[in-house]
Image (tube, rainbow, N blue to C red):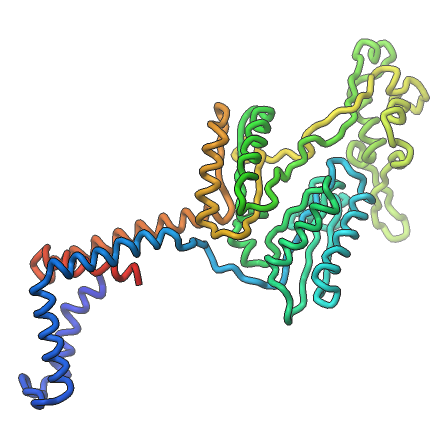
Length: 438
């Protein structure tokens, strides 16, 4: 609008001022190159006007196939960049001990060096298991859900080397062959991809939120099975631990009451023995010389409770008594539970994450939508949402389409006002398909 106002106000005034001393209507030199070019163009234009139907038919024959071919052009949110960095999420079987997970990560690190070449690896950094509470380290940026999970960051040197995506494909195949029981997922290692994912660890992330976690899990697993059928998706998996091993303690309240033991006392005894007393009974000792307070915690060594039988032999009587033991008032059995529970809008949420290879993001988005339809309708009260780069790409393209349509309408109104003719304005806008094709 501002350009139109300037073109009909300021531009004519400046043109009249700048050309006030010029001669109007001065004829061009006869026989000049410009004159000959003008005559040829005039003749060609008259020839086209005389065959307007043929010209319109040729124009349509050119534009329509071009629009059909445009559907095969890939769609991306942002050009893919090779920064020489990637990070690998390692998910061992749920509940694996920390030292066993560390052994797997060391073998994975060596496999990467052997595949890429030791001279091409600048540095690797691994974060295994949970960050202990007593360490002043914020693990929010390298989150692990338990001792079975780890993240490995790899930085490659510059120079002649394969592309990161080719390296990931090669490593992915070797890892699947060497560690069949371990789940691996490549995540964004550079800041650009992490920003484009908007918090999601992978470019494709589908969340399922519902009130009943059992129904949410069944639908999520069915949806993951449909996504695995898409050939361009890699590392399709549910990141949460769904079957984390537990020891279930069932207390006989009547028996506990007869022995003078409360459920609260049993809970504090178990937590103090398996984690530490710092979680239930904070204790501090102040050094009289320096005045510095130190946290004091008591717990049973991990080697002392390595099975359900050891837990059953745990004393639960207050005042240091040796009886009763936990096995006297409760039964200890093996069980399973969710190792990680996420929430979205106050609802329990499971997610399915996937990487992309061999296809553009637009085609992958269409394939994901088809897979969600094939999975069937979600349970009542369950919400399914697509996040990651797909969500941002669809939002961006929708805004661009709306802006383009609005721009065409505004230009049509301006041309109609300028030419005082709707037909002339439509003739000018008929060149838009050719512009889009270009």
